[in-house]
Length: 394
Image (cartoon, rainbow, N blue to C red; front, side, top):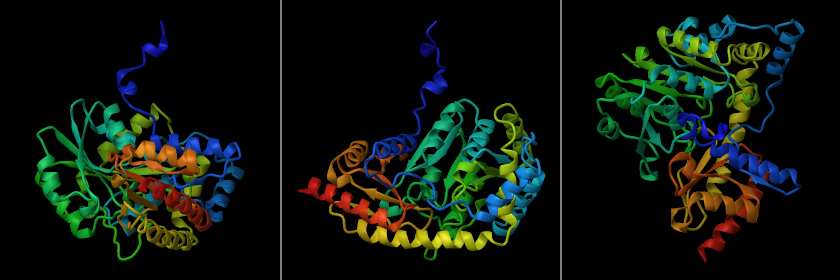
């Protein structure tokens, strides 16, 4: 029997993450000695704050290297619950928290535990690459809601209302957004919540970029609104705000019955998250050094955001919406007449600049640039991008 011909259909239909493919290609070229300017990675370029590292080291010295609860260390779940109660005004207990191997597993666990074959999941586009693929793995049906620059890549209550069918079960919201960096205002979140309530739906709210806000942006957790607590799954993690991407620490907060289901699922997949790493996460949430560290990184991102927006706004035959959160720019290249993957491939091979094609996020006329890179590299990379765009525009 040829094993390549026996891969399950649910896995065979799912492509590999294009963001990881592009990042890997750029890293391979860099390993060959090529000077690559990378705007592809969705991770901060700062080291993990030292007090978090020291907490993990101390946990190792104290022998915290054993198996732990599949739902996570109780002290960490208590710290997460306190954070959600204080910062997000969510009415959750430690028993309603599951610690996961990164924010991606939090989303995966929730969708796999909720979605039955044929259930529809509404996903605004552009979307983070894994949302629709995880829905497919659950044998659900992703229903894409297209947006555009005129709406700042946000769905409206009217759009949501029109997309709902008798098979709709879940709505996915991501604010601040990957890949666009847009932030739904509190008023917009309230309006969408009313539609979700009116149709008795569930909502998965991916809030992993909530600490990275700029200008006058304000984050509102949809689960804090009246009537929404029992129908909201809040997913987040430590990767972005605390620069802990490689630590693989995420979490979800949800009604107890769902947490019991996702904990059962995780007990048969990865079991507990790395034990000593969880003690680093406890320090991230409880140590008074954490807020200043987050703010220092946020200010650096904001400076880069302003610089990159000013540069990208001047590129011929392109346009960009100024983001108010996360660390991404979403550049529209539709007028250049080149599909996004071809554009990004040529930009990497001919000018040694790594970006992510918009087709990965459901929009083939855009590309994503991360400003989680230092200003000197950003300046050099944007110079190269400008040269490429000018060549195409002639």
